[in-house]
Amino acid sequence: MGELSFSIYLIHLLVLQPVAAFVISEFGHELSAPLRFAIVVAVVLPTVTLLSWITYTLIEVPGQKAGRFVVQRFGRKTAPVLEKTPAE
Image (tube, rainbow, N blue to C red):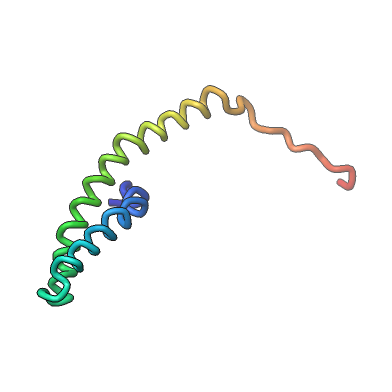
């Protein structure tokens, strides 16, 4: 879950809000609040986990690889030399 945490952070509200709004509008008066909460969690948790895994696999990992390539290809070849200031 640690590798998916950023994707989960980005996606969870996109899934949570419409699902919660749907459950409240359809079953708001018929079901108790704990039961509505359980339904929302049962729908949102696997959906967010699956979408997060997909975005991690298809977007984040290739992006990290591309970033490493750019740094290796175009990054500095040597360590920067620190210049002494006149006060030293």
